[in-house]
Length: 448
Image (cartoon, rainbow, N blue to C red; front, side, top):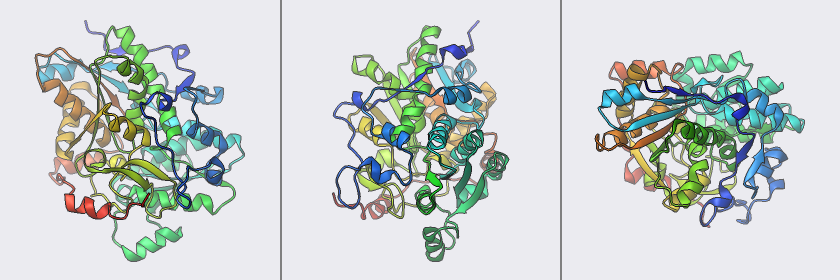
């Protein structure tokens, strides 16, 4: 009988996060001060981030200790299971072995809690009373709401308008944890009011919501800003996923031939892939595949350049694959993947040809998600469906090839059922983002 789950003891949970930056060939370009075009000094970001996180952001140390208070909360759901998707294998008729790291068991239902708890801890430690943030699909907003409640912090969430309308029960979850949620663009900030005036019917974007949250944090002495992906410290926190997965694959007596994760800002894919990098650099025959929506093709069609992380151009300049900070994506249902930029860490790994980026359409992803639910019993989030679709592509490329596939199941879809309703009703459509629109969106990139 096939062993379905590999479950670690709590004592086996990693006690350090891994910083991949020192091991990436040719390094990661530093963030730049948009005023001086020089590398950003930590003190310049101190008004919106606590120093504990800024130290991690700029760290050149390979390992960062996980505070005991963070470990204690992690133990609510960590270590997370590694699961063999053998019923999916049977349905596909493939000789490939498919494993997934199941991050949907966290309180918020996704991997986002791994960084949310850490960020809330470091803010609380430095006397912060309130956090402001953005959320696309609502996974990050839910995770930070949970984490803020655990550490006694207030939480204000700017939720991208299209997801605010599509995902009412994400709002219910955030309310349950005590957070305040508004649709972005909102009348609560200067940038929100400006965009509502110029684009009254806009579906919003993560770039807009980030601008609002940063403005909120910068305008109050008791408030800092928290970001759910992209930045280095977020990637570090997520590496607990891959560190656990390496132990579990060893117990299973397997090693992945292919690693897969969906890519929006980059946190869940990097969290799984980063701890395997040194193996690949030492000669392991391992492919890393990052999958993104064809409607938001940051890695497959974007430019590698310095760009702002938000519409209002309030963030540092990040060297990343980008579709331009003016990019407003179509209203696809994978809300967590609708971001114009990509983590500088992921971008550097693509630059070095360590990661293979691919893009897929939302209809084929929902079809993959339905098949996964019917075979493995778990309904995946629309974002996770992208990773499942890529795993199916790999498993069926040659059904007689006995390869081992590992993907990150970044979150469940139990709060995304309205998206499945629209899929079953035939109301969803595929989008290819036109080349001319990409050229238009990237024409205002900063001149560095």
